[in-house]
Length: 324
Image 1 (cartoon, rainbow, N blue to C red):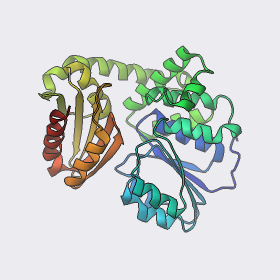
Image 2: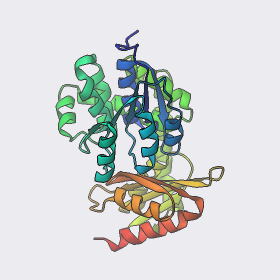
Image 3: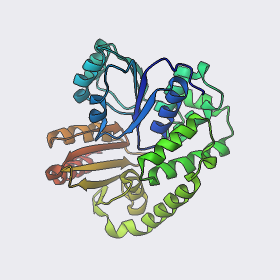
Image 4: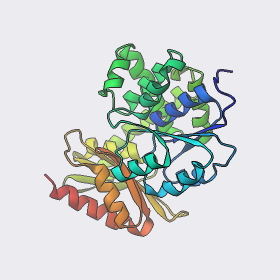
């Protein structure tokens, strides 16, 4: 097998939603073996609580953390090393707390987590691992980062764009965690996305759905000034992005409610020329209604109690429309 350190009892917890998180999991698994867990923000803490003393090394990748994880990390640090690789904006108080716990931080908001993971391990990885990092940079719109620019200059751009597109649409369309785990395992074997069984078919389904959404969203989205919002099932991140195009607004908000958990998951996207930091706004308003949020200045998200969704949307819209 390809693992270099099978003696290490390692775990990688990475973001399940997109190419970046899956690439991180593939690179860490390629190098360290052990096991990987794909999570979203709703079950991150649940998975952290499952980490026991048979773990010696924990990687957390492409997941914007907040103070709610500190208790679990404090417990885990009693028996394991912890490495946190991420690119989401980080509160300085949280950074200080993580450093004090002895967590190794690999953090840069200019890059995606996949590129940061690759850069950390590049000497021990095969050259094809750079392709995976390139897929992550393209898919996460961080190709202008200094490490990403240097990396992408070594590969054929059309190939990277094609493989990134297939992988991105397939992962967004995939419903089963088992399929995403399968994709990660194949990426760890340095397989090209178009050769991974099921990727091309799912990608085409995803593209067709995006086109259909562009045609139907104008009749479903509620527009209030510079903001469009809708409650809709499916990939809310994709829907939020398409709202900007289909409805000619500066900010798109898509949310879906999970009655069994009494919460609503929210995705927020901003136009390229938007000067408002959506991540900070999502975090502040989510906390005010008993939830949490964060992300990037133009791509953020939140999870709030079901009874707080209306207030969250109303306050978010008011803030965007009152800004310059």
